[in-house]
Length: 148
Image 1 (cartoon, rainbow, N blue to C red):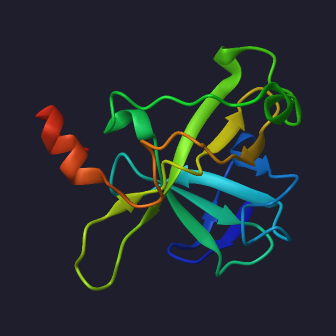
Image 2 (cartoon, helix red, strand yellow; image 1 turned 90 degrees about the vertical axis):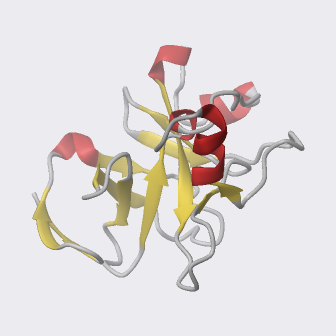
Image 3 (cartoon, rainbow, N blue to C red; image 1 turned 30 degrees about the horizontal axis):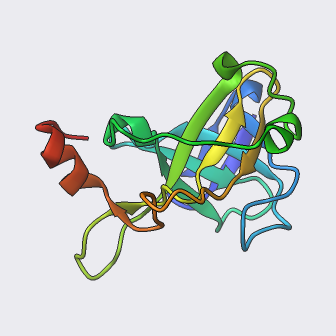
C-alpha cells in the first residue's frame, strides 16, 4: 500500500505496519490511523498519520537509551487495546527534535503502548515522578556509556 508522508514523500508500507489508535494521541484525538516505519537514522521510527500527511511523530524505544525505565499501566488501559500478555506489548516514546539546537528529548511520561498482535495502540500517562515529557536521550545514553 502506498501512503503520503510528511518527511519521505510517497512510500510503500505493508498492512502489518498500520496501527489503529482508537482514542487518538493526546492533542490529536481525531487522528486514529497511523503507519509505523523505520526512519533513516536508527534507532528512530516514524509514526505517520494516514489521515493527514502533515502529521507524523518520531518515535524511539525508551529501553534503548534508558535502562531503568519502567511503567505501571493499569489493566483497563491495556484491555482497551486487547493486551493479554506482556509479550504482546511494544513501548515507544515520542521524540522532540528542537530547531534551536537544544537537546533531543523523549516523552517518557506519555509513552505509546502497542499491541503487536492486533496492531492497536494507546497513549498512557505515567504518574511516576522519575519520568517527564522532555527526557534528554543522549545525556541518558552517555550515563550508560553507550549511545542511541
